[in-house]
Image 1 (spheres, rainbow, N blue to C red):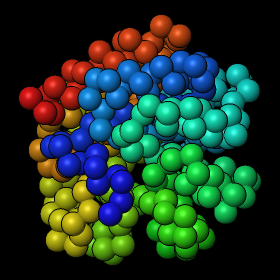
Image 2 (image 1 turned 180 degrees about the horizontal axis):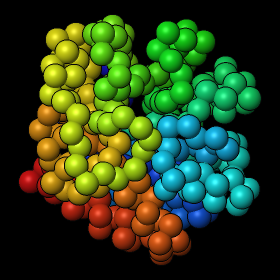
Image 3 (image 1 turned 90 degrees about the vertical axis):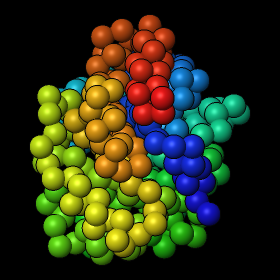
Length: 257
């Protein structure tokens, strides 16, 4: 069984997203540990990319700050290796296909296994082209996590049937970023997912408040939050971990009262 299943074994999962290297790796490590200490179920680690097409301005800016600061994929691997000395919750990378290609797909995916990364999310990888990476992910025991968007329509059942780890349901059209309300008919998407897979699903894009997280988790198995956390990092920099931890605590207490 996938290690990612453990994230959903204790009730609704809260999944924070953190851009590695923003503002530096020491702060990233402290944020991850603060998230775990405050109840995060699984950590999504963003590997910065110069053209992050799925991201809104908040996470784009975090990518730029990290890259300007000299972050590299190898340094991020070193970060995870260090985190794995005491962090036991599942961790997944979220990045772009080009990052994996330029590093060398087998080298990248085998390194994920070696350092203890449980899954890989590539938002710019069309489902029909996942064959470029899937055999390597299966060879090295790294779940290739699929996304379902409101535009997936007739393809949702097919994507769900082949899902690994967990299914990432994109709440809204467009790019990442906090939203005042989420209006997509997510219930009908989740219904199709449930009919086609036993793999858990979590909803992301646009969630920032405990109320939104509860609403999304009532529909699914968990909530994913990125931009709201990255905003804290942008505002507080090296002092952000304590604030991130406090924010995560409000979310996990709302999801698992």
